[in-house]
Length: 158
Ligand code: ATP
Ligand code: MG
Image (cartoon, rainbow, N blue to C red; front, side):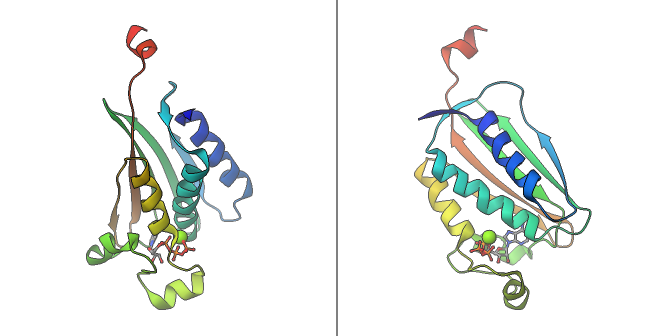
């Protein structure tokens, strides 16, 4: 169905902000305008839930998580950045593989199965989008994904 992505994203961020137990600040860089995309809300909720849970899990005390949405001609680009431990360069692409976890010992302590991002990738690609990561060890990680988007006639006329 057609969903206003900005509003949908705000609600999900709100939920995490209200329930988080870590001392982590949320920063939102979202457009003020409505951005309608054709999505399955349940599936996109799962995508965002997986990505944001990771960002929180790997954030340091007092860290910041930044949420961004950018509008392009035929897609929107969503990104979630943290200031956490980061991922070694040679492993950045592998994090979307099933059961892949960067540091076995660290990951065991953190809990989880290593499926979160594999599921996110599957769901994003089902929507016709792409997902990728950029990361710097010791500085942080950003997960990006896109969703196909068409400017509506109303947008063009206003
Ligand atoms: P699950 O999501 O099933 O609970 P998980 O979080 O370990 O388990 P994924 O979400 O698929 O699994 O992530 C895979 C691996 O990628 C993680 O184990 C972790 O090593 C690394 N990773 C993912 N997100 C981040 C992040 N924001 N910062 C640092 N490492 C990350
Ligand atoms: Mg995860």
